[in-house]
Amino acid sequence: MRTETGAGVSPSKSVIGDQVSNLRGEELGHIEELMIDLQNGRVHYAILSFGGLMGMGDKLFPVPWELMKPDPENQRFLFQVTREMLKTAPGFRRDDWPEMNDREWSKAIHSFYNKQPYWQTQKHDRRGERPGRRREDISPGKTQT
Image 1 (tube, one colour):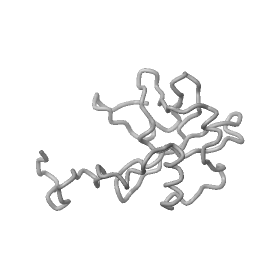
Image 2 (cartoon, rainbow, N blue to C red):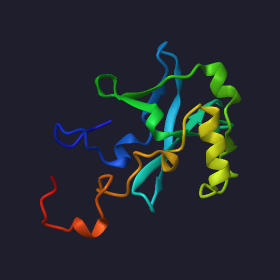
Image 3 (cartoon, helix red, strand yellow):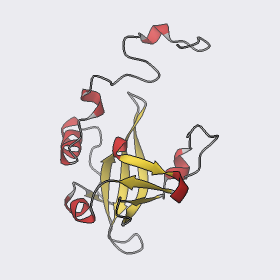
């Protein structure tokens, strides 16, 4: 996990492969991929690789991005879940990815983690927009307040 400047901005390629641990310090796996919702400009899921030996036989788990907490001091992400819970989480085989655009599938993933999908929250807004502002009010070069 490398950040560009002190603002916490980091290229996605620096996150791929980062270790994920829980609050007990148990290693849960690593970030295999980031899934981006192009309609909303948000990271939708971190795909967590868990289980198997040396990348063989491991299962992939979509984790709502909001549940991954950066721990830059230790070059990892923290995810508040036990290994036992992760073993029962909805996941998929490396060679059989689900349809990530399926909202019902996404709702089931979020439900497992007891998290409301971001597209159903009132705080949700589109790229760079703030609630109550229209997209046409925000243009390049215009200062946002």
